[in-house]
Length: 496
Image (cartoon, rainbow, N blue to C red; front, side, top):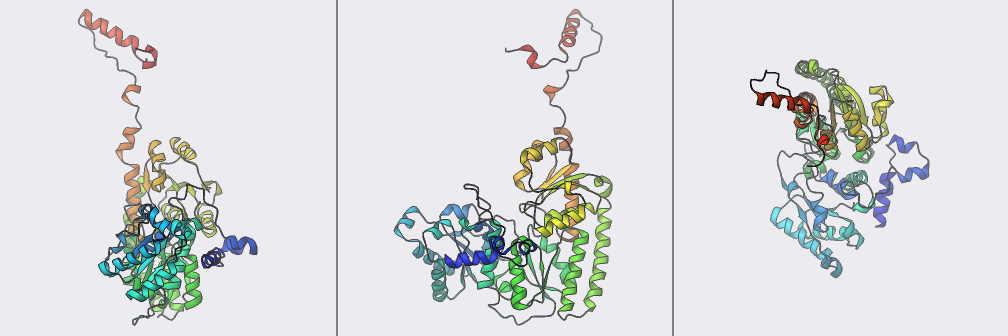
């Protein structure tokens, strides 16, 4: 436990974070962590954050040493896609019971589970995650993993990020530390080249990195390791031989990027593949870093030619949507890199941003947003559901882009909504991804269902009065009754 405390302090004292550098020494050691609210850790604890970062490694067995509920609440929490192995989607847990805890059977059960996974699946590695229960009762995960690795002849790696140690973001960083301590640098590739890069913090949600990788392939740039999206264990083990790196989500893995630069001289930059301009800029910076590390400068010219070609195609496709979407108002309730990258992408086609959340954004993210929007009134740290509902019901936005947690606020306000968080079903990265994002926004805003649901309900409408001349006394009496009660409501009649 003392080693875990030291690791946490090292992660929180992040020198690559501008916000941390601005603090005094005492405040810097506290990092950006804040105590969790009891009962509110679901979806936000350190264990969940570690699973988010590591589970997209597709050929590894992820074993949760805990009661069943810990795995049940964290399995498949990101829609990361795989181009090959599907072992990462198989759920492994030791399923500790109260009897196991009382009788001290946890370590024996863990060793047995590792052996069964090795015999049944033969993975290249097994990641073992302790959680609150097994960390509190003191199971020696490190010793069991070391013994199992010696016994079965494969890497068995402890991921020490039990939920109670901190937030989801801390768990992200602890997962990066686990890769640094046990995986990266353990295998030497025999095909290292001057055009190898790493992409860090890219999760391949809905397969969106597959829209970017063909662009890099056309430039002759090889992705040595994409961590963690669609990754393989041995690719990550060889990641230390890349020449440059791109950081997509600095909130999660800035410590990994910084330490790889220190240990193996791999320079990195933070960029985004959301939006046409940002995608082009990311390709330029990748090429420039590779040239600085010894690649042939001719790649710069090929990069500009590729950018010009792809931008021309993308803008031509987007031209069809501009008349339908220009001037439409968008509210973003998201965070992190999307808080500025998606903003920039949408403004490129004339969409107005009426607000964007920066709750999970870094200081750098917030500065980018201010430069893009040039109006602090459109930036909010946190907006309660009641405030969101009021804003949408007053028609201050034509559509809300957010995660699944707030979709019902938009639906209750009869406002179009589009998922851009990890549960999304469509890829939005790269040039083609930008076109797809705009297409989905257009489909959502112009869906005829919104015109229907905004109309008054039949029982709230004024009854129609027939104007035809009556031909009999009976019809005359009926017409008089209809006219007399026209405009009344059910409240006018009292109880029946």
